[in-house]
Amino acid sequence: MEGAGTIEEIDETVDSRFQVMEAVNCPGLGRTKYSWYTAVPPLCRCDTRLCPADYFGRTMVLNLPDSIRVGVINVSVAGCAIELFDKDNYQDYADTVPVWMKNIIDIYDGNPYGYLIDLADSGQQDGVIKGILLHQGETNTGDDQWPSKVKGVYNNLINDLGLNPDSIPLLAGEVVHADQGGICASMNSIIATLPDTLPNSYVISSSGCTAQGDHLHFNSAGYRELGIRYAKTMLSIMGYDTTNLQYPETSGIDSKEIPDGYMLGQNYPNPLSPTTSIKYYLPQKARVTLEVLDVTGRTVETLIDDVKSIGEHTILLMMVRVYPTVFTFID
Image (tube, rainbow, N blue to C red; front, side, top):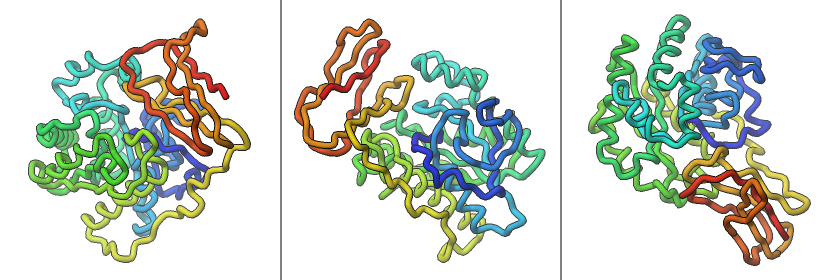
């Protein structure tokens, strides 16, 4: 739910009826924890990216009466297993994660579940909780117990926030679909069984939602479409006719300008996780050498040394060891 989509110019225009409660203090954005703001991305933390909640909220306010505002509270940790939100046993999992993830967890005072409860309690002073959005599963790929673990998190949220489970649906999105070459797409068959374990839950299809070159994260267009699907399901649950919905403006989205020359992009995610992807662009067919260097400038690994065609390329790294790196691009 943290999101990995590039925030583009079109994403920065948001109806003020769509609000986000800032989860952390972000001086650079002029935002403070516990305060509501127009939901201009990022919605998770100060430096995160486009996520499913962005176009969920936009679609909701377009189709609800003008008197209704929609607010989201986003507490998410990229790459985590569902065990991190286990109220009683989260520390067992948190003790095993890599440093980059621990740094995110620490932002949430070491306990993302407890942090979410604190924010949601505050949010209930201003509005009524209507549902829970979940997008997670990649790290639990193949785990048949995932639905029961999600049910445990849901039950704790309901009890700790004093909610009625009959009126609080949980919407869970699929991970990158097999039709996009999703490397965790097998998890979708497990996600599909969630309503069998948690009756008031709904699965949001990711079929056709476009992905980044790592086949692990959606691209911006994919996140937008997935968010719209979350909203369409929620509106249906609320009793609205979804046959003639209004949708957010998406014309011109992802219309990238072609670089004039060679281009090497920043790896993402950064800091490194077990996987990270790097994009580069060639204005013409050329030999490419892409190397990983340590901080002394010594080559520790050659990723590419081959002739590549014109256009944009993506390389996915599976990080089996960690070392300080810089990336060089040599024609």
